Image (cartoon, rainbow, N blue to C red; front, top):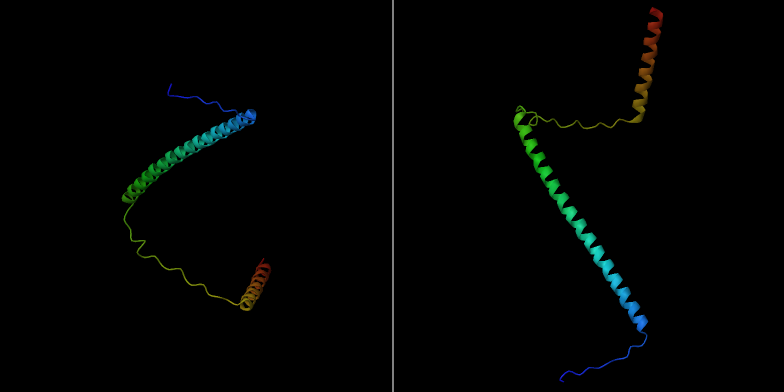
Length: 114
């Protein structure tokens, strides 16, 4: 007897039902996208772990290879590359012309000897 029941009338009950169903559908879609995201994250974590193991194995193999290779002092004697010298284009053209003349002289000499 302590509980009293009240009834309330709802106008446009079809619209309210449609809105509830649409909200439920959006909630399910959000949950599906969240599950998809968590699967992608899990795959990413697994691949990162695989990459780390491959990198560790590669490092181990590189150190073994370095131990097996003979010891040399090649790195100690690294020579710095020579500085490039800027050459003007006009002397270059003159050199090319001189070389072409020399080539013609050599060809003419070869033709004379043949």
